[in-house]
Image (spheres, rainbow, N blue to C red):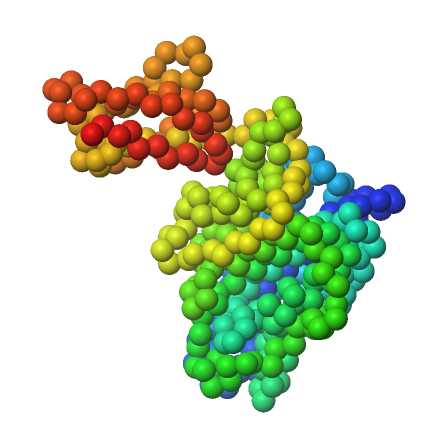
Length: 377
């Protein structure tokens, strides 16, 4: 297992398991025997974005501006690169592959690390091919190894998440960066026999006090990422950890589970995602501060008018503190987006020809972006 230990001292820690599955031996473009009737599984092939997404998550967890509330203890990484992108981490090192057996071994070891202290933060991230029937499943890199039992090389996402609540780690972050399309295979076998990484039981305890679970997309929808680049979801999580999910309290800036969930749509939109085509599903229970930021995060302000047709005619401006007004250089019909500091801001719209009355509004700018419509009617 490709395991990095950052801190093995006694006490609670953050323990992460990060999986990126892009090379699929038995799917289109793979190096092994192709799975028969591949069309019924959506004609799936190789992924260059998923391994890069896993690398991006590791970068996010180790950002220098993050001071975790409990120390970063360990990160375990499994990568199966696509043949056309053999070194997604750029370090030339061979990572353990994300086969079904490899994922199971890593998950079991990660479970034990997380279970060692109730104060631990258990973080699980997986990127790869996903399908949906009655349950969502993620396909391991050796999916299709046994043509008559292909689901043995996949795992059930929902049952795995339900089982995780029995782990003693009171804070659990579960991130699934995979499609949830329904294909012919799921119609023919709606309850695909993909085993959970750990099966839930009726009598298991519920030890999860702080739950952040985010599915990168809605049921029947795809998840997207540029070729040989991190997915929009991974980029959004990275941006959230970098300060996009920041909230100022007690004189400091904090990244919390609640703000990651609350702002995931905005973070994904800023990362370039079409959120009409990919709609993430966040769940956050009992929000918790995860890390302190050592600097004030950046923020954007998007200004326009209401009604929208007034935006083209408006002279827009914003001001923070005692600084002079910052004015839009030319009138345009689209939203004016500027970089500002988080905090109080005064915005205004004036009209040289008197088409609408001049208006001034005050607001609080929050990372990663605050949109304000200046009402001029």
